[in-house]
Amino acid sequence: MDARRVGGGRIGATRRALPLPMRITNGLAMVSLVLSSFDLLRLCSDRGRPLRFPLGGRELATVVCQLASVVYLLSLFAHSDAPATSGDDDEGGPAADAEPAPMHGAGMEGGDEEIVAAVVSGALPSHRLESRLGDCRRAARLRREALRRVTGRGVEGLPFEGMDYQAILGQCCEMPVGYVQLPVGVAGPLILDGREYHVPLATTEGCLVASVNRGCRAIAASGGAISVLLRDAMSRAPAVKLPSAKRAAELKAFVEAPANFELLASVFNRFIFPITIQLIACLGSVMVPMATFLPFCIFAVYSSRTYRAKCSRFGRLQDIHCALAGRNLYMRFTCITGDAMGMNMVSKGVENVLGYLRNDFPDMDIISISGNYCSDKKPTAVNWIEGRGKSVVCEATIKRDVVQKVLKTTTEKLVELNIIKNLAGSAVAGALGGFNAHASNIVTALFIATGQDPAQNVESSQCITMLETVNDGDDLHISVTMPSIEVGTIGGGTCLASQAACLNLLGVKGSIHDLPGANAQRLATIVAGSVLAGELSLLAALAAGQLVKSHMEYNRSSKDITKAAS
Ligand code: ADP
Image (cartoon, rainbow, N blue to C red; front, side, top):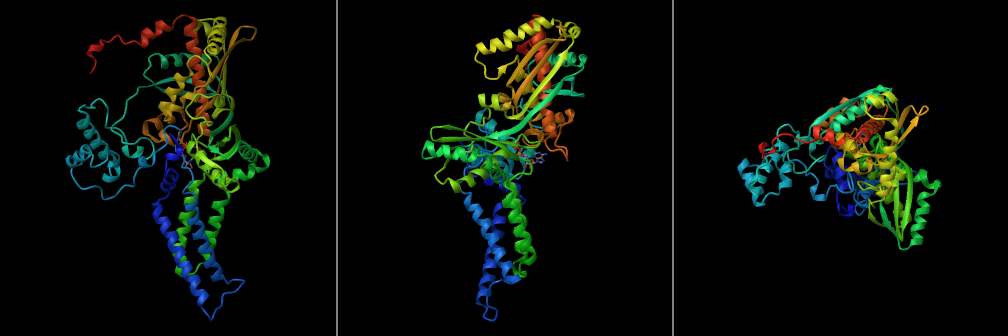
């Protein structure tokens, strides 16, 4: 989706961060501006008390109050033409008209029948049901009924009860009519870094959980696996156009200059502006005359909240790396994002920097907040080489007798198979980060179970699996190297009850108060550890020639499918 078309996304995000609608905050700023202007005019026309420097306490306070209002209002206008954030991601960013409308407390008049008829006739757009009814569950139920009437097909098999429709509003899914059931199996215990994990996997592929479980058993019998987190940085790369390649190169040099990093990082994190605003607000609250005191206080609180919505307590810029294509410049910003997967966070910071760069490069045309050099949900070399999200290596040494007894094969056969299949075979196929047997199987099943964005399995599954004999050829060393695991334990689908339960099972739900980012990092290592188990087991099945046999046993229904529910 072209992020430029996503009008209102940033403003929407800001609005959602406020307890009151944005227009009330703006109204308060206006009131503050008008009252302080009035006060200034009165002071100027007071002949008995001429206005002169240095200003007295009251005059200064009024000026400060007015300045704060003006800065606030100008900042709103300054962003009106900035590109809107693409929201969560490249392909799924919310469109302006998809943004949830505010709920009207009173709700819409009329019975169910009347409302369904209005939706069917098109008089009431389906996507407005939640805001018009003020009841998400009822909105979903009536939409479902309208769908049945419009299509003439029932959706009885699609469950309705058991979903918290309020929880998904504005966060997970628009225009819901139900949810899809997926079985969740558990593999383990996976012994990883001295801890035990029971790994939830949501899948409909028979054999997968059993296979990972067998891999976990082999790892546990050999003393467990060890993981190393190499890097933690989410990326976003806007595309900008300049009048010439020379000018684009000048911008590249400016952005990449080490001397400018601190400045750009402070703009990215918005350290300066909110602090300034809050200082002015505090000063104003203490000194402003009684007539403007109350609106100013309220305005001060909301303005600082507004700016907080534009920055993040957790997002911190780490690096900017640029690439040119003619006069187009792609700036890949990478940032640490605490326990959130981080796409929203990094997009907000990038928007701040783009706004700032426009001062020095007014000829810079912002094409899109995402220029695909990020790279989100696409198989790319940049993620494979530079990493995106968490970069993890996980290893284990499997004892020879475990290879024989649990995996039913030999160390030599496994090593040879890995070279011919995962390394040479993938090279022949021209793979991009696909030097593995089935990493995406495990990544996707874990992602769905724990509320991650399943589309990010594309880069999160990039993995090279290495096998060697060690200890004089006795034992097997196996490792998986995964540079782009994109996970979070906060935000997105992690808030839903079943996904939160799976995170809880792994002991990584939410965040640890004093250790922001620790849970998300641990989840990334669990993903890598589970992939290690899956790789070990599938390679063993292939080496022993058991793959087809076990799939016939677990993956092919012997039930009479003609009797299955239609
Ligand atoms: P994402 O950036 O992954 O799309 P969100 O936009 O939902 O996710 O951002 C996560 C939100 O959760 C932010 O508003 C952030 O301030 C908040 N948050 C609270 N605790 C944490 C934490 N430990 N790590 C990251 N974000 C956190």
